Length: 165
Image 1 (cartoon, rainbow, N blue to C red):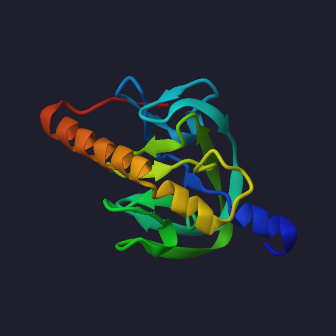
Image 2: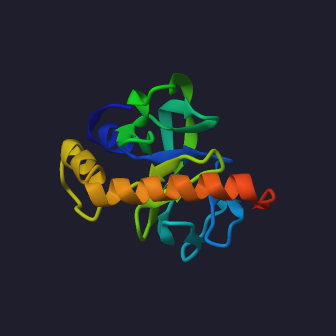
């Protein structure tokens, strides 16, 4: 997709269908089944949810996102296209992806990875470099590390969780 619309759509940060999202109650909900007002773990209230088309995706730890999605790599947030271990895929036909905005700009899938939401930060209209700088401030990094530790502890010390549609 070219032109201004293609550029705007290309910058949407989304998950492919059937990506399980960790909910506040410890269960998982497929990204396409999230509803406004749902409560996701660590991210709080789902404030926006939609659909978009995407031709460039990255597979990381068994989950697919748009290539520009911000992912916490254990040390800092990076774009999916730049994450070590990520596998980029250029598609012949666009696929539907689901952008999500949460109260605290955080989403977690069942692969234990911490993702930023579509807005990423509370500063609309700033450059990508500035968004990454804000995402990687010490407060956000501390929060992402906390989530990773809690998820690891929970996965080791609990029974499998339910996935609902």
